[in-house]
Length: 270
Ligand SMILES: [Zn+2]
Ligand SMILES: [Zn+2]
Image 1 (cartoon, rainbow, N blue to C red):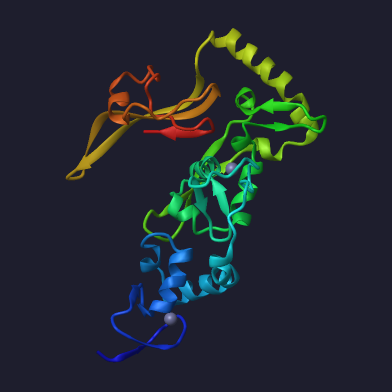
Image 2: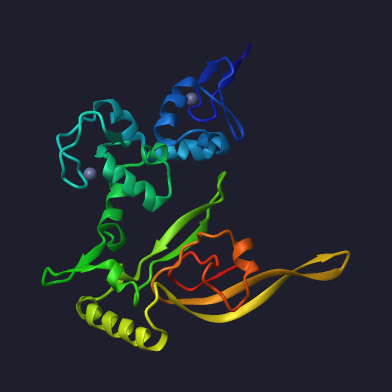
């Protein structure tokens, strides 16, 4: 077997190497790659993209083995258990913080483990993670009670790679001014009592803009399915996708109870 040139570090190496999208790289690079690419992710990247990431995190990769395990979790400040912790690229965090980060980023622990503390920590200041937000006077406002005014909106962002998208959350609570936050509980309560007076007491109420009967085409001819796309917004409460859309759609268009709504923001569902 001949000698190859590693497309990442430029050194010669023998053997099969480790495949990426446009070449094979050496074993020395592979050790670094596993620090910053979870699972098989590097397989789908070009040598150039891998080199760029290794350069970006060169300092953290070099220091990986000398990172001490701290007594307390750097995010929540609680005692870090001896065994139950998650190793990040440059730190250790507790499993409860790891679980929150994983849920918020919709990434597995292996992917979180390839990130730096500085990339994860800002997430923990968000109202959605803290369950609410403190105003200037130190009063804590529960996020759930304000969602009637400020729903958490889930969006999908296209990204290269196997899954094809990442989840982003837009939380209006994170950008409220001090005055808006202070007056929010009173406004939320007003809104709730208005909705209650309008629609009665329900777990959730939503306003419908459009109901569209779905169809398919066969040989240029339309056939209407017994399914509907419902568009609108949630006024009160939260609706989650629970029932498969097909069985939800089988009920009449006037009955939305089991429709496939997923977020508390503006949305539509088939
Ligand atoms: Zn190499
Ligand atoms: Zn923690």
